[in-house]
Amino acid sequence: MKLSQLLNFNNIIVQCHNTPDADAIASGMALTKYLKDNGKNVFFVYGGNFEITKSNLKLMIADLGVDIHYVRHQVQLSHLLGLMEQELPDLLVTIDSQYEEGNIRKFKAKNIAIIDHHQVAKPLPEMSEVRSYLASCSTLIWDMLREEGLSVQDDINLSTALYYGLMTDSNNFTEINHPLDMDMRDDLKYSSAEITKFRNSNISQEELRIAGIALLGSEYYRDNHYSIVKTDPCDPNILGIISDMLLEVEDVDCCLVYSIHEGGIKVSIRSCVKEVKADELAQFICEGVGNGGGHTIKAGGSIIRSLLEQQELDYNASSIQQFFRERMKDYFVNNEIIYADDYVADTSDMALYKNKEIILGYVKATDILPVGKKMIIRTLAGDVDVTVAEDTYIVVGLRGEIYATTEKLFFQYYKITDGQYKYPADYEPTVRNHKNQDSKSLLPYVKTCLYVGNGNIYAREIKARTKVFTRLSPDSYSLGRPGDFFIASGSDLSNVYILDREMFLSTYEKVVD
Image (cartoon, rainbow, N blue to C red):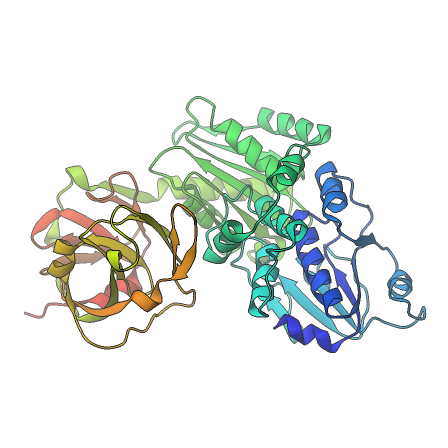
């Protein structure tokens, strides 16, 4: 759906969920401004049983000039729009929420539209834009405005609201992994003074009490050095604060903190050991019942109540606690860890493979920036930091992933070819100057090359979750799941690594005797 489709209607209600957070307020503010700027009769509302009371949100609304209205009855919508009491709005747009869900009061309108970043729970109306992979609805509305050729850079209040919306919904940016979230975070020109003001008004006395009680109830699992903590319902930021405190405790290497809400469960994950990446653990915990992600040290996720119940799990405190106990136990017990520095592969159960010749992309780094400069290449898989040397080459893989290598290694594994390069992924990779963050597309610089490999390899299919610390990356593991492949170089059996199943089958074929 495009925002311009909403301009076919005149009397419009923008509605967020019943307990608005900063993300809902920011995204609703942005959509309301867009519609008003296009001459529409529009009001931004929320329902539920309680008005906004959190001090940081009240400051945000007052300081940034957010025009939001608390309504409890259908007739109030008509009064706001200047309509007759029985006359319905032409359009109702739910933002950061979905129509008829349990966390949003149901109001009637002639037409319904949805703009949201949560998991889809029910059939969507024709006018819908839901991107569950984004960390915030603020990012979604920002990108939709860009698609209409509009920028929010000149509106400091709106930019600040969107930045704060993403910051709070991603637990201070620890749960973002999609490049669009990163782009908005880096591109917005916001008021740092206002953000500081909001952050310093974020915790109430009641939330401080919640944090204290939660820490007293911590469950510690000595064998694998992790803790699980349940809190009363609270702002997701409180989960992060509790997680950070737990990681300061002796012998706690990682932790999971969660709170149960009406429609789902918020989760915060922390890790301080290289054997556990917080983002990977969050994805494991939420797999099949929600979304998880973030960074190697700090991450989080959301579990959707309806998805949990579809797995025949009761939505009560004891069942949910047991769910987390079992998932954490499964994560730590049912996996293998391999350190390549002191490992030699046993090839008795491995087959011999040779690489296929594959067309990929490459860039000589000095074609983009001078020697000595630092660049950030942003891709769908994350940011890649590169310091430009005279012999630095950048390779673009089968799925748009980015690798930096040396000229010697490049010509050892690849051969330059003619032809026009075709990028395989949805998100166009960008290059940012590390100093001033100026951004430009990588694609105009990319040329084609042929992957020719460097000899045969041994491989076997993985039967259990496997973490491999390679010789090139001894402090960060590659994860293999059942069905992926464990690989050893034919010329050096301690040079081992992981390739996911799709990538392996696209790259290699078995050697036939």
